[in-house]
Amino acid sequence: MKSTALVGRLLFSALFLFSFPGHFKHETIAFSAAQGVPLASLLVPASGILELVGALSIILGYRARWGAAALIAFLIPVTFMMHPFWSVSDPMGHQIQFVMFMKNISLVGAALMIVQLGAGAYSLDARTESRKPEGRRTAAVAA
Image (cartoon, rainbow, N blue to C red; front, side):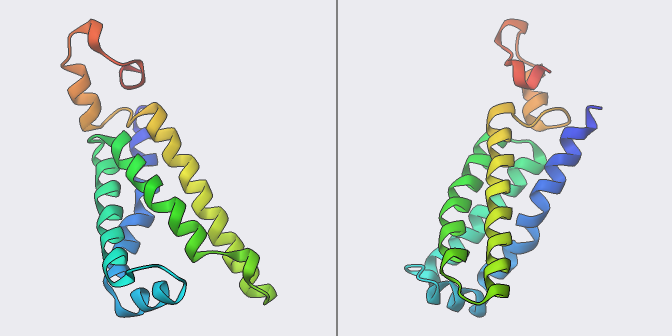
C-alpha cells in the first residue's frame, strides 16, 4: 500500500494545478480586488505561482512539508477573504460560500497532515531519506 501516499498527493494537488492558470485572468484579479484583496494585480498572480510551486512540491514529494506549508500560507488568507459566507444574505450564495470555505479548511487539514507526516513512499524526499545512514533517517519517511 505504499502507493496510497502517491495517489493521495496527486489527488490533493490536482485542485491547485487546475486552478493555477485562473490566477492570471483579468476576471479573477478583478473579482479578488472587489473582495478586498490589496494589490490584487500583483498578489493574485503571485498566489497562483505559490499554488503551482506548492502543488508540484507535493506531487514530486520534493520538500513536500515546505510545499504543504506554502499551500497553508496561501489557503488561510484566501479562505477568509474570498469565501466570507457569514456576510452573504442570499441563501444560495451563502450555501455556496460556506461549502467553498469548508473545502478550503479541509485542504488546510490535509496540508497539515503532509507537514506532519511528510510525503511518504514514492517521493523524492523518501529517496533522499533512504540514502542517509540508518541513524539519521526520520521516522515519517522511513515508514
